[in-house]
Amino acid sequence: MNGLKSIEFRIAKLTVSPTNLVTVKYKNVAPQPSIEEISELITKGIALINQQPFLLLTDLSDTYGEWDNETKIFVSNHKQLNKLKIAEAVVAEDFATKLLVTGYKLQKKGEAIVKLFNEKQEALDWLTTKI
Image (cartoon, rainbow, N blue to C red; front, top):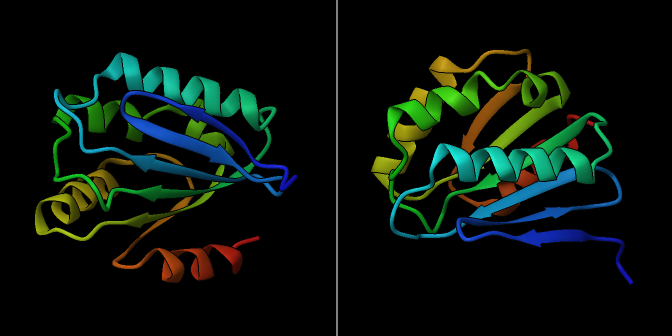
């Protein structure tokens, strides 16, 4: 067994490695994720890592810039998430999603570095330097 823990949501699949690398692979779903769904994902994810510091890989490669501003602000200002997150690598392929991520980076609170990538492996390689 590889020690991975995961939870499937309507909006994403959340996976946690034994080293507290959290991967959130968002799905292209309609309607767009609600604050309630994002809140549930964050709460259950933090429980899976036992409220310990973690690295986050956010994979938006299957989505198309579908978050509203209220949801972006909610995530970027989430105190517990920002307190525990060491660094975040975001994978996005299309222009609209990259704009969404740029807005998120500008609104975010907390010390964690957020960096945008085109390829998942490049993002993982960068995250490993943040351990």
